[in-house]
Amino acid sequence: LGVLIAFGTTLSARRQALLLLRESEERLKLSLWGSGDQLWDWNISNDDLHRHNTWRHLKKFPEDGIRAGIGHSKSNIHPQDIKKVQHTLQDYLNGQTNHYEQTYRVASDKGWVWVLDRGKIVAYDDRQQPLRMTGTLKDITPLVKAEERLKMLAASITNISDGVCIYDHEFKIVETNQSFSKITGYRREDVLGRALQFNLYSPDYLDQIKQIVQQQGSWHGELEDLHKDGTMYQVELTFDAIYDEGNEISYYVATFSDITERKNAERELRRLSNTDTLTGLPNRSYFQVSHSNLVRKRIMHALLLFDLDDFKKINDSLGHEVGDHLLMHVAERVAEVGRPQDTFYRLGGDEFILLLEDTADVRIITNAAKRILDCLAQPFHINGHDIVVSSSIGIVVYPSDGQSSQELLQNADTAMYHAKNAGG
Image (cartoon, rainbow, N blue to C red; front, top):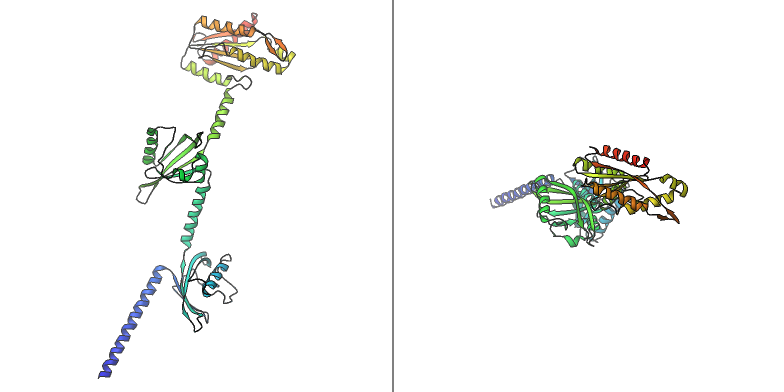
């Protein structure tokens, strides 16, 4: 009876142990399925490999990876990765590292997939040679692609020509790129934690920008600021709000490009388009715009249009170089005739016009005309020549002599030729 009881107890214990083992294996199996990892068990001595939780897209286990050095001639591991896999595994088998771990690409039905391969020796023979090794294989393709994307974005932001400055929700700088330092002159370390500021603008203006970005999500405009060395530069700036998963603003990103050279070029082009290149006076196109504005605003004024009598003879006899110098000297002399509010223009050739603003007083107008004739009557000394010129002047007054810029200029031209036909 005692023997039977002892046998029954032992049998029950074994059944209980077997049940616990099955439950443990079931939990391990479910854990493997849940993790998506492959579990491998490698008998090194006879090259027997067992896999659990095999992937449908990876029907062939990585050759020359776990089984490196066994002599397989073909491999489904990426050619650029196989050497590092073999070296890492061999170093571990030789006892040079504490564990085996490597990432590499392996061919599958979905193309190349990235895997994280980890393993450890679990049994040795009598000579302390590796006998058995187990490990896991994890598909990390999404992680690698995400990491590559982050590296690509980080490299792009770091190396783009536009300056990038990232602010936290309190508009304090948390990160900058290389172009930020190149444009502003300030190193990253100089500005970290600094609040948003533009040295040439009031705090109220900055508050308006902040409010627009917070309410509308972005702001775009052109600003001027001071370089670290004190020079001024201009930027085209875009502010964008970055939202978190809760739709709350977590960061603000400012991207800007240096437009100083472009603005200088635009100003120079405007100057050239509005300036006579020979004399430096405002040209015909600038006169037309300015005069049209005066007429549109109904501002009283007078036009004194004049040219040089027989200027063509001077060009023909002394040459165009002397003629050009004569025109420059005429511009210098007549520029002193008008009042501070008056403007002197060269319309082209030897035609000039003096615009007397805010006046219809005949005495002021005739006095200006006499001063023009007197200053031109003095000889010009040019390249060893003494040149004496005379001039004919046509005068119109707005609004009595015309209601439009074109009409006034035509009447002034007619008046000038009447004067020329009358002897100057």
